[in-house]
Length: 238
Image (cartoon, rainbow, N blue to C red; front, side, top):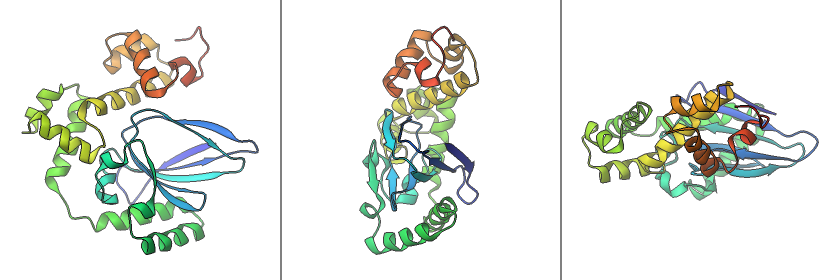
């Protein structure tokens, strides 16, 4: 069973929990431009920004809790460029001092609500990060521009950057360049529409794909399975 709720103290973040029943389960985590701080197996782990789906297996009775940061917001909190964590799962003590992580691990492990404690950890860390208006301007400008369908060259112009500078900033903040980020965000929009029951041809057009076969290719490339299989729709649907 998977559940999520909006975080309160970390803007744009989402708290989620995955609980496994009496039998082991396989699950697929899709790329979404986000990074997560996760409590699992009695340890704190960071999930970096994915470029392709990650497939895992949870054991019977497992409970995993995570805080998913909004795109582009985790790197400053974690204190490491996002590209260094791309497609990786890293123990938090590989990023922060051992003693600090041991204390945080004890806190989260003893908490009645591990998710709320993860949020408290992130909020405290975030409050100690010096504001960077230029970083925030680029982050919000990139997300807004890509969602409006602005081409990368024009987006760089809008932000007063060269394409090389834009790519470097995106790597630091999001973990990948603007073109990959665009693919990931477009897939996320398309899947949201498809899960709502929209026909695949309409999903493709509304999300900005050239056509339905283009959507199908991108889903396979990023999610690793056909769209119908990903959504659990029968072969004749969509």
